[in-house]
Image (tube, rainbow, N blue to C red; front, side):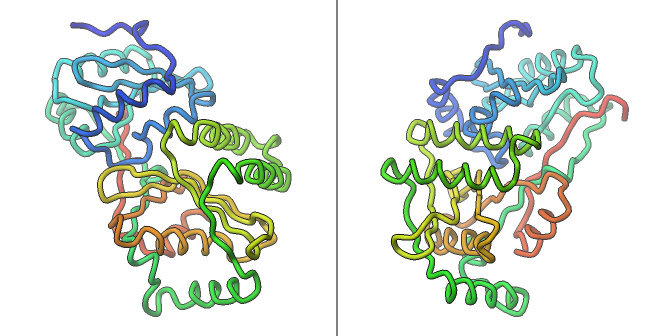
Amino acid sequence: MTINSHDFRPITIRDRDIFQEIYKGHPITHSESSFATLFCWKRYAQTEVLFTRGNILARTTVNGHTIYRAPIGASDDSVLRDVMDLACATGHAQPLLLFEEDQIEAYQVLYPHLVFREDRNFFDYVYRTEMLAKLPGKDFLTIRKQLHKFHRTTNPFIEDVSAENMHEILEFLQKWCEWHECDKYEILKHESIALHTALKYFDALQLSGILIRSGVRGPIIGLSVYEELSPGTLVVHYEKGLHETDGIYKDLVNALAIRMEGQYEFIDRESDMGVPGLRDSKSRYRPDHFRKLFYLDLDG
């Protein structure tokens, strides 16, 4: 069977059940493979999907540049070859992304002459939950001091994201975007759209979240939205904190880890996208390991 590019269609919320069924037999390890990521960023990435021979096929198109993703599902060389043919037909130099270890291994066997490169900017940072909860030793001394000051001055109160506080969350995000000028910066604008999509379909996507208030009845100053990526691993898709509240991001990291310790061994906090400040921040928490992203380099 040969796949035609016209067989793909836009992703919909109804596709989640199919994704989850395939994930059961083929657990994913990278946040970019999650249905929530593909669905919530669909407006920016024009995400399209196709289900064939027990596999999930996906492609995204940004600024007219279409990139295919390696299939997730049952091992089938014919599917791998079909996707490779479609990717190469785009005419782009880097037309295929690979997020899972079995994907890169399978393609290297089929195409030993092709070059697959790592993209460090999109490695997921994966931490031990216990480490983020306890912040032990000298390496985390500064963070512990900052958290102590934050708790002393802010009196943070943690609350689950729910329908009852959703209107306050939307007001909080509007305030966050006004400060960061989301409409001025393309990536922030689209991240805002993705986060609002996540909140709109919060229950259907089976997402979870916590918010932090300044005091029991105070305003929201921080938000974290997350889900189970695979058995034993939680992935944090979105973290937002108000700029004037020093220490809020550190408290979001620590508070979630304390809640999840004993339930999940690892917390995936996604990539740094090559942003120097973000890389420094994520590295400071001493990741246990990375989940790598590879791309096909036809110019290699």
